[in-house]
Length: 323
Image (cartoon, rainbow, N blue to C red; front, side, top):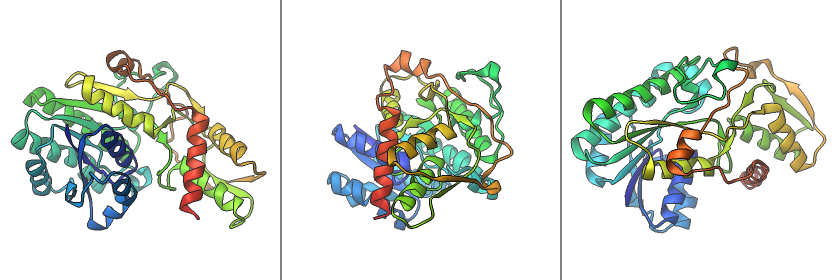
């Protein structure tokens, strides 16, 4: 199969690319800028089949550029991952969040409709679209209404609705994915799990005092390993129903405090904790845990990587990055 991954140079994009290449598929991908190719150096070294000409420079907010890539590649499947993913960035520039996340989805689907209408497209949204969930909504299922609390969640809700409209209104083969929090090797240190792992590695190497800077440790989230998440995307591409939405999650709620305790136990350090008010978000939902029952029932997908292994691999990755 020939696949196109928008956002191939991103966190999940690189892991998905590796999974597909390991399976013998032909992989093409987009990156935002020429400089973003550097994020693919390790992936290209592992898989010589990922040639330079398979990596296309295209901003998904640029409709002609997206159309040119789709017309040139003629993929059997598209995994639309390219997006603004960091919630604080969306707060700073909500217009950019909507341009990339919502309009970018329109541009991808419009290019498919024009140039490759039988191509199956997975549009990767976010559980942040659910937003304000109460105890009565837990575990969150796909029928839960969207009540986003930040520009990122709103832009992802818009992208999800756009994907639904293009599937039903234009008869495109579109599947909507709603991943919950995920982490693992290769994640940027601006995200909470990787941030904590990076701080601990810096303490381990005596590059900073033995104190952690944290935000809200009481928030409960549904964390998964990114490698399980991209396996869910691949399973959904093969078996999910057109037009449908699917949560991708572990179904297990863990507090941020519990996650941090797991990292500290693995690294074996005695550290202090300082709460930084600038890291607190007034729109944080106290608890969000999802149900992936629909995805498991229809595709057979199941998370396979133990949480402790995810944390250990994350620490190992941050050690390599800071060497």
